Amino acid sequence: MKKNEQKQVAEWRPNRIGAGTAILLNGFFIILSVLTVLPFLFVLIVSLSSEDSIAANGYSFFPTEWSLDAYRYLLQRIDYIGHSFLLSVALTLAGTLLSLILISTMAFVLSRRDFRFRKLYTALILIPMFFSGGLAASYVVNTQIFGLKNTFFALLLPGACSSWYILVMRTYFQQNIPTEILESAQIDGASVLRIFLQFVLPLSRPVLITVGLFEAFSYWNSWYYAMLYISPEHRELFPLQYVLYNLQKNVEFMSSNENISGAVIVNLPTETFRMAVVVLIVLPILVSYPFFRKAFLRGLTAGAVKK
Amino acid sequence: MILLSLPTVLWYLAFCYLPMFGIVMAFKRYRMVPGKGFLYSLFQGSKWVGLENFRFLFLNPQMGIAIRNTLLYNLCFLVLGTTLPVMLAVALSYVRSERLRTASQTAALLPHFLSWIIVSYFAFSFLSTDKGLLNSLLVRLGFDRVRWYQTANAWPWLLVIIHGWKGFGYSMVLYYSYISAIDPLLYDSAAIDGASVWQMIRYITLPQLRNVITVLVLLNLGHILSTDFGLFYQVTRNSGAILSATETIDVYVYKALMDQTNYGFSAAASLLQNGIGCLLLLGTDRLTRRFDSEGGVL
Image 1: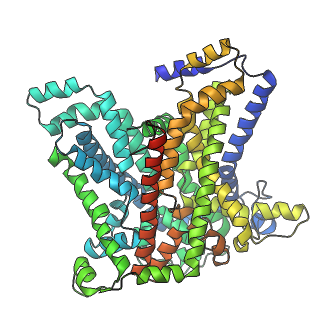
Image 2 (image 1 turned 90 degrees about the vertical axis):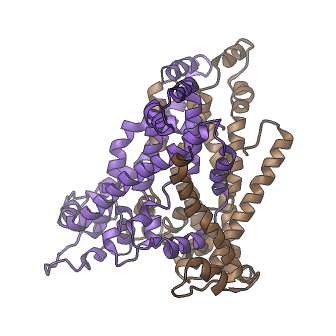
Image 3 (image 1 turned 60 degrees about the vertical axis):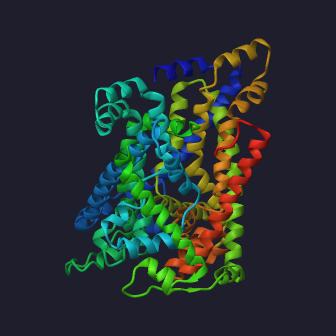
């Protein structure tokens, strides 16, 4: 990181562009950033508007009336939304852990130049990057051979590994772990598993964090597998994203839940409620994002290193 | 070593290689034999139909539209998705304030971490016919409301904008990180020789970026017939009226499978998509290798 900062300082090129251009450039990037972030703010405001104000003026940056109704309703339906929220959290945690195990072990094996099947394994992970059996074939295999339909594993397994991150991690291992350490450990009679756990993993925290974060986000954001493999009757297996997708069709989707008591909710805050769920999904991303921004930026560059 | 990598190898065999047998489905009328496994159903239970699935595919006008849309969108994304971020990254490298540079990158990268479902709600808040912000503005300016989800002409623009909004930050930050890794001495010596800013960009920055641009463009060419399913299915809300402008091969493959449960059709379309993509990738890789010994990805 230190090196990087020095570079950035050195990269400051005064006198090369005029003061006017510099101001123009600053203004441009400020406007660009604001425009990029604006939709986030908009949805948040809509979720905090009152239903009446939306009925009167549509979605607006300046609602005539503010209201927390959407969030109150969210709390009322906590049995359902809460369940999906926890499912998404569990899926994210389990998925990230599983991906890291699958990716790091393979990356380690590929990083060892003395590994006998290195060529074969490289081909094994490269081919699927460009060729696949297609959706229909995967669907049939996953449902008819593995019986994944309507199971938690359908959400977890199909997306668990990624050739791209294996390559990223392999490159990192090759560049950052001195072979002397591994060799001396080998001479001392440490098993491959021990070398991996005791030397390689602790030395690779940055790349593990980066890849782990990317995987965590992709599990948190996943809806495709739910759409493919979870039938409408199995609501207990809907991740939050998929709940939101179903809300698009009807909010009553939730009230049609059999558990709901006879109490009819007057003035269901339909419009704002959807946006409140959007906020509920985006919030964890926003909260963790600045915190991990450095890891993201590092991950981007790591991914681009040519093998 | 073999033991350590065993789980991953098994994963690849199960989720990547086993489905490749399914390609056979493209040449069969797949039918599940009750009580038998997938491979039995596939090889024994289903009838060979040769190229019939493909013939129907090409006879179907919808497929033609889907192929056209896929190619046009991807070309557009490829050209805009390369030139704009490169330009932005170069511009960003001339911003003096480090804080502004960091803030710009942070903001630009943010949409990258949203799912298409979330993006579809963002889009809806602007495009909804009776409540959307865009229509509110149009009404205020004295125009009529536009039913965006029924107006096919608007969607090429909308999709390009939405795709750009979500994706430009990632590429910009990527290119910027390459620019900031360029040796500053190069610029200093050029400055001594009296080079202008434009000359430096033209003769130092861009040539240094050439390799990664080539690699990324090549990788994208390999997926020229694949699109982001979420963008074209979720963001458009799968609205029937605008399909002529929004349906791509992936959406078609999905619908053939889930709505019509036509396995053969869906598999044939996938095979076409994959096969052509692979050939293109290999071809262009060869080509760039011939012109440039350092280029190429494989």
